[in-house]
Each structure stands twice: as C-alpha cells, then as structure tokens.
Image 1 (tube, rainbow, N blue to C red):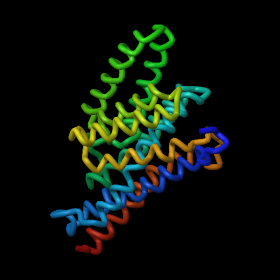
Image 2 (cartoon, rainbow, N blue to C red; image 1 turned 60 degrees about the horizontal axis):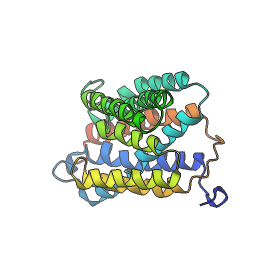
Image 3 (cartoon, one colour; image 1 turned 90 degrees about the vertical axis):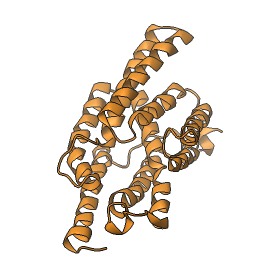
Image 4 (cartoon, rainbow, N blue to C red; image 1 turned 180 degrees about the vertical axis):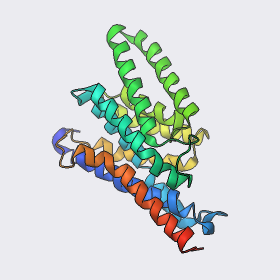
Length: 248
C-alpha cells in the first residue's frame, strides 16, 4: 500500500487512542467500581471495555515511532518518567480508591520500560550484526517484561512484550501489523491475557493505514497531559456518584 493511499496521520492515531482510552476508563474506572456492577459488569461495561482495547497497541506503536524519530531519547525518557509520576496519584484514586499505592502502577511505567528496552535492543543491534543480535535483544525484552510484572504496571509483562514485537518488526509495516495482531490473538486465546484483549488486534487496522505524516497539531505536552487529567476527572465523577450521592 503506497503512502499516498494511507489516510491516517500520527495526529489521527493519537486521537483514536485517546478517545478509545477515555471510553475504556469509563468502564474500568466508573462502571466496574460502582456497587451495581460488583456482581457482574453488564453489557454496557463489556462494550466500553471492548472498544477501549484498541488504545494500548496504538500508544505502543506511537512509542516505537517516537523512538525512531526523536532527536533526544534521553529527553523522551525523562518526559515519560515525569508524566508517570504525575499520573500515579490520579491513577490510584480512580482504580484503587487510594491516594497512593505501590500495588498497581499506571501505563506510563509500562511505556518507560518498553522504551528503555528499545534503547538497549537498538544498541545491541548496532553492535552485533546479523541474526545473532536477536538473542540478546530478546533477553533484554524478557528482562523488561519481568520488571514490569514485578512492578505490577498496567498491562505488565505482556505490555512490554507487545512494545518489543512492534519494535522488532518496525522495518516493514505490513509484517509489523500482522505479527503484532497475531501476538495479541495468540496470547489472548492461550489465556496469557484476558480474552477481551483480543479486540486489541483491531488497532492494527488503523495502524496499517498510517501515512507516516508526523505533523503535530496537538502539542506533545497536551497529549501527554490528557492521561492524568482524564484520570482525575473520572476519579472525581466516581467519588461524587458513589460516595457523595450514593448512587446504586
């Protein structure tokens, strides 16, 4: 498929990821935390969470694109770390109803670990020529996945592994989309992740139509800030509905 026929820019992918994430967190942060859904999430929640599965693979793809095109990987890493720290309290308030807890870390920590893995894997690929470079690259990726699982980051080891898969096949967009979608489907059907996560494979339909255009009509800091901002808003809504108003 020629780039001229690809109609989705980086900005469009960002908005698809953001909107589906907003939809997902209505289900995960509000519906599933309400008393009426404790015994069963219901059809509406299932719909919201299914749509929301599309967000994470797009964020992972954009992370890989950021690694490839950024002028400073150090600044990129520090930016991810800064927003991970900023987002942790809103994340804990929404998903754990606590001001702060180390039992579950927000998705920025997963992205940071994936990004660090890419830096190490890229270095190894430059230093070790040929197919032999894949062995240490996979070892690095496995180590990053173990750390993510130990830290209990959002999406955990699977999330870091998905970033690695997208990165390893980034030279060919068609292969990248097919392999990444298959990785999601296989791990879902094997029970390594939730069966609901199979819907995440749909994200690669949009990614397949990515044009490569990277003009940023959305300021990068605004883009990053929307994650902690929406978590804070949703946490406030959940508190008002189920604590102040005692909605059942």
